[in-house]
Length: 405
Ligand code: PLP
Image 1: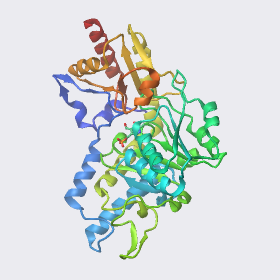
Image 2: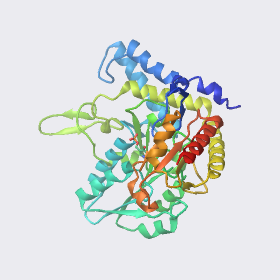
Image 3: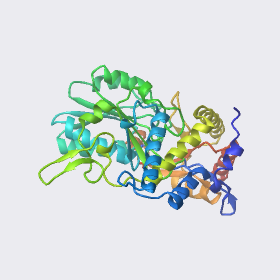
Image 4: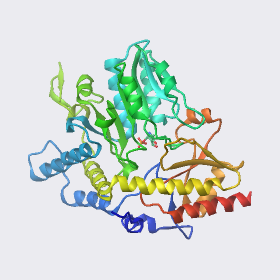
């Protein structure tokens, strides 16, 4: 199938907006993606025609809302190829998924003197929850270093794994460098020592086919809003044998079997981890988004974005004073850069005046910024609807700003 990006763009009303009288060039997809009409319409339709609280009602609408919500779980299961819907937990997003895991895993598995391994290129969301848990438990955080090219130092990982290591937590794609990490290899090495692995999939799920059984990871987290779905919903995948062992994260409705003042027993998976009314409209819309990208074909999206990234790197490297951070052999649709001594905030602000939306700053990866010896970068990140003409607009914009300074 030919990937027709102009046809795809028609599904995204916001892309025809003008910003300061110029066509919007949206290159902040790493932060959040725009929503296709199909996703927004699924939400409107559910609120207008179905809305009722799930799981607890005998009435028709509650049943229908429950069916949509549980069908969405099956869509997520299929999308990441989990074994069972018991392994799919709905959360508010990657951050909540990791907080859930850090808390529950910490309670059950981590003791004083134990260690948790993260990588030097993690987002704060995959550092701070582990740090908080380590503080609570008297455990230590250990860090897999990276090379100057922005790749994981796998040999160093070997030295970090030992009998006190409880879990390894690693991003599949860096939200700053675009590095695609060899997470399957990380999992293999950790599993040789019976250590489980969490993969942060926030930046991989929107761009490539993910198969959790093939990766063999024990846990996997991602956010709906970064994969063309709504805000406020995300997923934690966990192997059933692990989730069975872990205690609940929050208490309240839906996560219980029986409650008395003496003792509460917990619901079965996945509900044990889903206290309170879930955002069932968002879960349905997330499933709609996953169906949408599946319909386009993840391999087509990946090929389109890879081509775009190659083109952007080629053109950007020709700009005088251009410094691109990260030069991994395998990389994704994220480009962090600085030009000469132009401050990233100035660059971002001036690009905005040209209608070009990029992100500036530390990208919630302060330890990585420290490793790179910088305070921040400008980041352009591509999505399935971006075009070469938009890359050209970015390059021309950067050139124009560079000449101003
Ligand atoms: N992990 C990575 C690699 C990210 O890029 C992000 C978001 O920028 C997150 C985690 C946190 O995602 P959310 O804010 O949707 O919870």
